[in-house]
Amino acid sequence: MMGLYALRGNKSLREKVYDFLKGQMNEGKLVPGSIINLQEISKNLGISMTPLREALVKLEVEGFITIIPRRGVVLNTLTLSKIKEIYRVIGSLEAAALEDFYPLMNEETLSNLKELNTKMREALKSKDFDGYMDMNRNFHETWLVGCGNEELYKVVKSMKERLYEFPRNVDLILEWEEVSLSEHQMIIQYLEEKNIQKAVHYLKDVHWSYQQQEFYIKQYYAKHLENLEKMRKGFPTL
Image 1 (cartoon, rainbow, N blue to C red):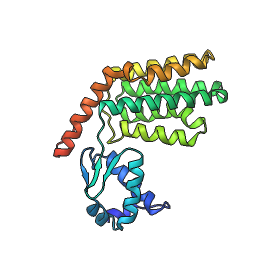
Image 2: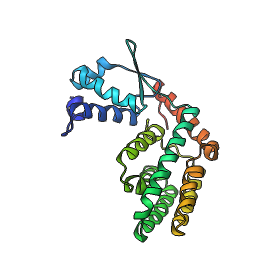
Image 3: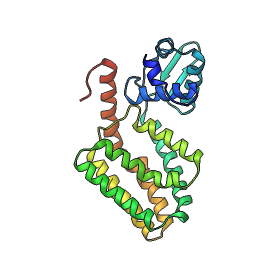
Image 4: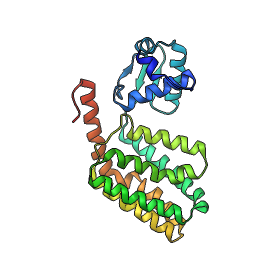
């Protein structure tokens, strides 16, 4: 019955299985570092191995898993070196997206960015961390979606999911988020000044710089790894 509920919709069976597995990762039911039991998932969902394998290939391409021939499927863990690589890629792609989107920006766009940043600060104060993270995504998607480059958006979306949704980490470092909001404000200020070069540089070389953010990154992922270990052992994370 789990499979019948999880695989509703008009998507292909491969896409439904992919969405289901991503959901299991997001909820912490499939934990990084663990091995996926393909036979069990196939049985529980009531599907053959073919769509399951097809979904796994897509997850491997996106970096979520590693398929080891004749041995199984392992959910990848994040290391600091891997996080550094991901930050570099996201920073470069977001900067390109912002530069491409800039000619389409207007006063309404800037007003929306300001409003989002204000509401994020309010959400942080009220400890609405899910709302905060959703608005943070919307802030960045202003240019990631607005630039119209679907391939760029898919790469960035997948990498951010690896950073924050595998499973979803809401153990925020409040001091870091305050810094992030201030950085958002600087980006908005440069855009208001019509200085796209400074805005792009700041987004890439400050906001998405591993070196600039390393102190907070290490705190954030230390807590994340602690929670993952509790999940593996079946302990509550709160």
